[in-house]
Each structure stands twice: as C-alpha cells, then as structure tokens.
Length: 531
Image 1: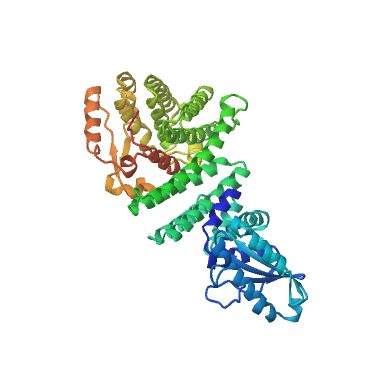
Image 2: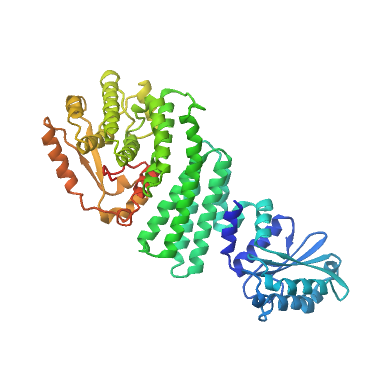
C-alpha cells in the first residue's frame, strides 16, 4: 500500500493538490487550520498555517525534488520563501501565537537533492532563532508524507470531495458477504470521466490515472485484508475493462503513454489473481476442502472458483506464460475432485465451460473437451428427464433453489446452455454425442429455444457495460436437425453471418479481454478457439 500511495502523491501538483492533502493530513492529526490553501493568495512564504495547543506549524509546500534551482533559483524557491517568513510572516504573528513552539516544515513530494544538502544544513543551523524567537526548521519528503498518511489518514481524504462518500462506502462495506459492485464501480467510472476530461493535458491525465490506480488498489488491499481476494480480482478486472473502453472511445490504443497505464492496471489484475491461485492451489492439493453447504451452494461456489481460475488462465495464455499450465492443473484437479461440476447451477455457466475448453484447446487436449461435454450434457439430460431439473435460466441463487427443491414452478423456455452446447458440438464434430442428445433436444426440450448471442463490430462499446445482451447484438436460435451434416450446415450458415466481426481486442492482440468481460458481467464468450 505504501508504494501505491507513493505513486499517487508523486503525481500531485504543488498548488490545490499537494498543499490541500497536507493540510487535511495535519487536521486529521489534531491540528486546526488557520488558512485554506488556495492559488493566488498572498501568503508571505507560508502555504499552510496550522496550530494546536502547544505548537504553531508553518508549511512551505514544493513539488518534486529540492534541487539547486528549487532551493535558491528564483523568488519562489525554498530559501526566499523561508526568508520571507522570517522578514514578514513571523512579525505578523499574535502574542498568543508567539508563545507556542514555532515549527516550519518544508514539505515536498520529492527528496532533497544531494547537491543542496550542505546549503540546507547551513541554513537550518544559522536560523535557529529569529529576533530571539526559537525556530525549528525541518524537511518532510515523499517517504515521510507516505508514512504519515498510512499512520494517520482516513483513506477517502486522499481523493477529491465528490469521491469521499463513495470511497468511504467502498472501504467500509468491503468485508460484507454480499459486497455490492456499485460501491467501487461508481468510483472507477467517476475517475474514468476525469481521464476523458484531461484531453491532451498529460499532467491531468497522469493524475487521473494515478487516482484510479490508488483508489482501486486501496479497495483491493482492504478486500485482501478481509480475506476476500475475489473482490480484489473483480475490482482490478473492472478497471481493465473500463480503461480499455476509454482507449477504444478515445482512439488511443496506439498511444504509448496511455498503453503504459493499461499495462500497470493489468499487472494489478495479475497480482490479485496470483494470490487467489495460491489459495485455491491448497484445495487442489487436498490440504483443505471446499466447505459443504447444500447441493446448490456447492455448485455455485465451485463455478465461482472455476470462473476466476479459467478467466485468469486464458489471460496468461495471451503471453504464452508457463504459469498457465499451473493454473490449468488446478482446474483439472478441481474437476476431478468435485464431480458435481457437471450439473451447472446457472444457464450462463456454459460461459465458464467455454473458458475452460479454450484452455484445453490451446494445449491440444481436445479429446478431454469431448469427454467433459459427453459427461456434462448426459447428466443434464438425465436430470431433466428424470427429475425436471435444469440450470437456472435467470442465473439467480433463489431460482436455482426453487428448481432443486421443486418449491415453485420455474419457466424454462430459453436456454443459452443448450444453444452454445450445440455450437460446441459443431466446433468439435461431436457426431456421436449429437446422436445421443438428438431425441432429447427435439422432443423433451421442444418448447425450449436453444439460443446464442452475436454482436456486431459497430456495437462493440455495448460489450463493456452491464446488460449488453439485452441492449445490443442478436439472439439466434440454433436449430436441431435429424441429420448431423444438415445440422452442421445450418450452424455454418449462422456463423458465416458473423465471420468478419472482429473487435478491438482482436485487432490489438488482447483477445483474452473478451474473457475478462464475460467473467465480470456473466456473458458467454464466442465459440472461437485459437492456439
């Protein structure tokens, strides 16, 4: 957290940012502010004046390192500011103020340059009394500021006032079992708005990006401290998604400085996933077992874990990372250890299965894809025929429980699970499996539309938002034919209509972003496989 805060503070400009932060910091420590930092005020060398019962504090605020020029290069340098305090500001103090210890702090989000250390020491030694008044002059650099913030500051006050309430909620409720995404989404979206407003102003752009990084990492760290790393993954995932959307909208996917921030956000995503993977690895090694709830909760928890692992593993494949094999081995161990995965809890759970299949396909383990499909689809067929059970269409836990307990009738008229399963059978030429399922699909599920969803390139921006499947794209029913070849021709015709619909993440070699989007929003990835 110290490094994250440090990166943020380094971006602050002297006036109206660093000075306001320092003022608020000392107020939090119990001081009373005598003036409000504001550009244009005549301050006689003093940027911030504060006091408590025993001490009068005068701050001189500068940005960056104290070099020779910053020390004594012009009238706004450090030494002239200190001299002006000695000649003017001190003489204007009241009798009550003069009775207190007077401390002057030169504060900067940099450090003292080696070349100025002798000048600084000499000035401090020669100015321990002004007109017989004891004076203490000290320096507060970036590391001291970071330490003070970590030790004393309320985290939301690092940000602009409009974000205080949202940040407070995001941090306060992070330990809640049902943590609402809206707490951090509001913060991320607001800061993305600042990034857009920065235009070509590099300082404003870097400040906004630093704010986004700091805010998101604070929430992630709090989630980690509460033992809920999944929330940290979701936060960092959302940052990557929304920042990519900004790059697409602003046409900046080829701008180096903008892409460098994307890389930083991706590194954060990797960091929290690595912590998560290490925790789940203990389950794969049977050091610990998943808690045993009711049958629906068991499946929901397992798919939650599989979703996090498979989305991250697909991301690692983007870079041909050897770590991807480690994650795949964990996924395989979970599939073997917890066979109830075959009964997917929700209709959209087919999206997680497609993510897993993409990993198997990358490593040419295609036979295993066929084996898992045969097992899973066979089980789902039998559950429906024998008990009238099926994956919950609305993807809600309450609905899944109704289906499991048969406590209330749930309409089953549309299924993406079976629609995408048909696309998968076409993709992997599963003729025998198709023959086994044909009668079931045509008769038992005759009233259930086996649907899929396709998006056009010119609708891409909808993909980065919730409810995209309701607001854009086209829902297509996959027909079930008696003859497998006729079925394949029908699917080929559907796929051909969307063959040239390539998105920005396809063109810029970040195809795993599609997986991150689908994992975050619960969408279903395209049945498109690459090695």
